[in-house]
Length: 297
Ligand code: PEP
Ligand code: MN
Image (cartoon, rainbow, N blue to C red; front, side):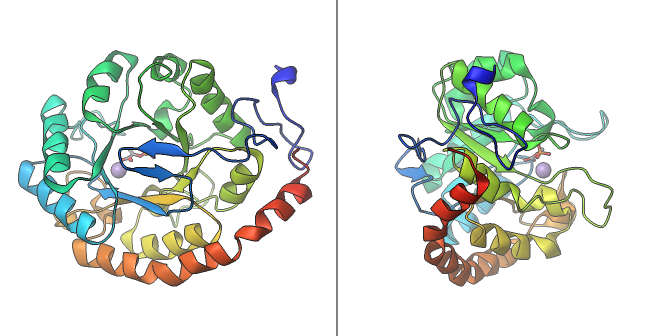
């Protein structure tokens, strides 16, 4: 595998060749319907953890679109920690996502948990989400190589950045270079937050890899009060966008209500992001210096 890796980051890890940043491929852009992720626009994906009902989804879609989101998130197949928790509406949920896209124009991101579901979900989704628990489901990653849709790869909750990029390389090797990386927090000894947002992962990934990087502050925080500030941090360190959980009545959500924003909270968060996005643009010229400091290529 050594020959397929780029020079080391900080003496620690190399980057796999198909996803590595090189002089000829400094960054890649992922096309989704009528917009692109990774080309400078900060793309916000928002919606409920799980699709629960038509009114829940359509109301959320309208609210997040009005506040500036470009993509509607919503799980139809849910990887729940408990076998007794709500597992999602399945195909019924996919149909509701399609209806929300027709009504709002938002693109759809939804999770695929099994290689057997790839074709079905690709019929409905604009972006295929691979959850943290599936980051090393290599049969799934290989099946996504031929799905014809961008893949949103979440970092495994105990994965190093090298392991994360190795999974991205598996998808790329299988034929799909339309990959978006997502930092969603990792497991550490800290219990004040659900996971620990590895904010440094963003500039490291953007230094060694050409792939766009999106931050999920919701699963990192586990509590809604931290979501806006982690989103602002993501903007400042150069993320290409966010994945945020939003629900009409978070206290009644069937999953992840504690970390979901209501509509007003999401609207305020979006409005408050503006100065931080300007900071991101102002500091963009620091990118090459970081690259030199990191020693990658
Ligand atoms: C989700 O996005 O709802 C989800 C289950 O995320 P993760 O895989 O990061 O836990
Ligand atoms: Mn969730």
